[in-house]
Image (cartoon, rainbow, N blue to C red; front, top):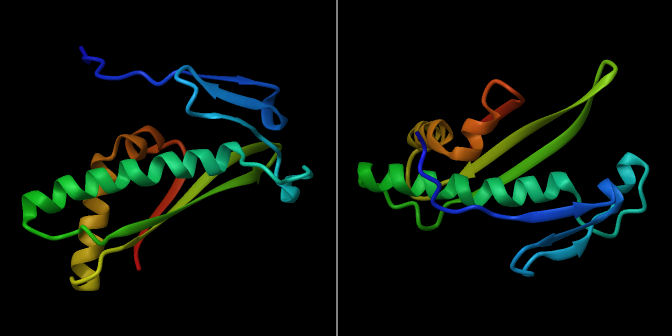
Length: 137
């Protein structure tokens, strides 16, 4: 059985043109559908928030793996692109993780990037559910 270490609590109202607020009040802002999806834009949206959450989690996994392998990833970054797609009569997410790890070969960076994708909790949550591409850049 899993041991809960932390639980985030966020209340959403109004859907994609709504508002979110965390229990601690740190997150407290409006959401707007992007113009590309017929909205007015001008505020964040669920896809941006998902990408914003996935990136730091992924870098944490990358850091753990790199530390075990003796590789310095302190200057690494990941650009997370979360796309909202039409899939027949339904909608589906897809994601691209572009991982930049300076100071090592492209091949070594790709291997580390894939290992981190195997252990990151957000990557695990999406595995088999959405199309995800992880690329060392």
